[in-house]
Image (cartoon, rainbow, N blue to C red):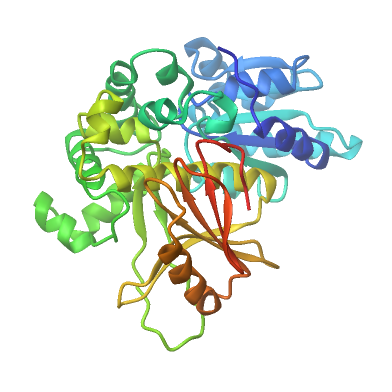
Length: 381
């Protein structure tokens, strides 16, 4: 199955504005396929290949000078020496207004400081997420169960996730210059999975795992840096309500979530007490994936008061704020619509949406509508 990626349009837009583009995303998310599709005439260098890595590490300026008009540099974080030389190569070519380099990496720039330090102002940055439900065209329950990684969707997702996790936690983080405790990180992931969408309490996590607050914080930074978790920050406005200040933490891909929680099929999933939290994370991640391609500067939050009023996702587009509440079944409950309508002004939102599974997309109140994401997988407010 070859899926058309929505990110292709955004990648080409960035390539028309910058002399180099950096595509970051989890390992095996489809970065190479996307880049080679968008730049079909480009030369390709895989920097994880031992011979190529050695050549670029020994004399990166020379190797860059031998490249043609457009080159894809895959897994660039494998050669830290590349980035200072790349800055010079970009500056030497940028006068012609063309994009000359597409740089692919499997860690966030915050984890590999070389990108942000060496290439600031010279690159367009795109984060490639796993496939959205709109891209796969698969039934919503299948996509929800297995997540959005292409290879996980092609077969048994649990058979795929176990070696993938081992590669990330034992090999990749060490290759980025860290000394990860893979057993601890696996335990931390499992605990976060059991608390999917819960408020982050690092002291409680540390006590449960028998480690310090700072160890938990470092572990979260590493897991976020390789795109396994998302810390969704709370939204604040200047109002008198007491608001929750801790972020919520989600396992980003529900295939990984379900693997960690030992669920293998939809029948097992439907019987879990945390089914609603899983669906919530799936919907939030799916919306964010598509939102940031259509509106790249949107800021994403959740909103919750100390008394329990909450909105699962707030999209702040700058000139427009949208409140989204996720429901595990049909979103057509008038009581839910009234609750959401009542807090829109506290958030400063122009509209609210109840997003569920099953049911019809209808108007619920003057500013609140419902939508069934399994029936309209490409929906965005």
